[in-house]
Image 1 (cartoon, rainbow, N blue to C red):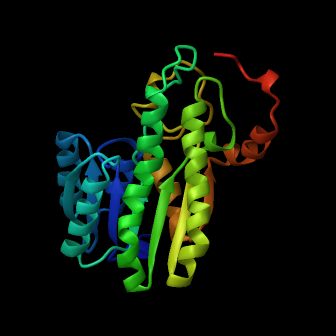
Image 2: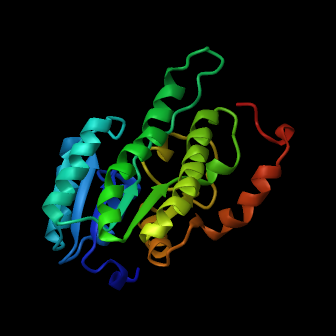
Length: 250
């Protein structure tokens, strides 16, 4: 990673206590960097915050649910006040659960939308006024290769990530005149507690640390959208054209 691109950065990261969020936190942590860390679980959040401080970063931790708009506004406002601004925001928090379509249960689908879509909105939008005043900033949303094609049993997850792509595409032209960049990151499988529960093949899996490295590289380069690893980047356009009969009906 090119650390020069993040020298003096003031970064808010959600889902910071585990997986990609934790890896992003530790990759960015360095003297002169300010980090605002958000996660629901206070104990692992405190642990990663201490690790980031040991690497030289200043850290503010916010145990909060990204689906809670008021809590996220408070976290954003406090971080901007404490750090003296914000340069980057990573809307990383997300969940993945199988659909309960056959059971006729909308609960899981509703929670997927609350965390994966509304959570992105609650994370990024409260920071926009500060970035507009600064005349610069970078909003980053963690989407997924799954955003390109709905998969059986994962329709809600895929739909939530597709919505994230559309949101960011809509934000980009509105925010560009104000010096604010907008990036959507679409990784393939990442070795996390979420993917550990999957009982199906997950090709080209990346470690959280490698995924963080590729994410930060894309952000440093100002990429509008990044799909990785390279194998998934090649496959993604084909997923859109895959006929239904080729998909397993799990």
